[in-house]
Image 1 (cartoon, helix red, strand yellow):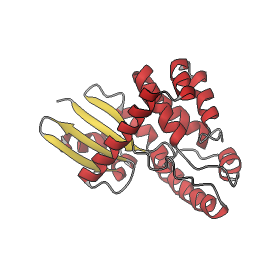
Image 2: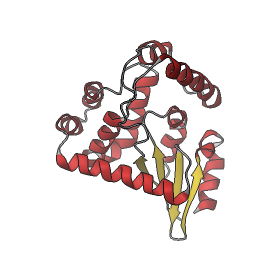
Image 3: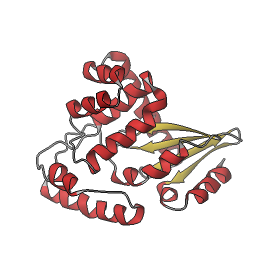
Length: 212
């Protein structure tokens, strides 16, 4: 039986980056339709990086690295966390993913991985719209990059609707944060918490089958 798995996430969420290898695997399963639902958790709000938040983020990132094996490099620590006063805002990345969903939907999951690795491995400021636009162009996603640069009305409306949908699912199913999965098929829908994304992949597939 084919299941729809909706991935609730934010591209600036370190724990979502930690879950990236498992999410990429889910996207390759023939019996699973994976849908990305950005929650807008860190989009807007005007938050900037300060020393206390940078220290908190790094301590959290060390935990994520130990649990998942995902890389958080010194380039990230110096060039992202170390740039005090820079914005901490996922709006550009979230909008970029929506642009890709409109122009090249089959590449949205790949784009998410690229954006996450650009930040945590390469140490790029992915809160910057120009940086994100360049990353899209480097991926050959010129149409999405053009839409991101102009922020046309359809893109903005679609992006707002995606965030509203994700937040509605989180409220409906009582999700306390991201990452999380909503598993659906003809029998109904159920929430799987983010903890399920940090263990054995076959166990996760079993949980999805039971959930569905």
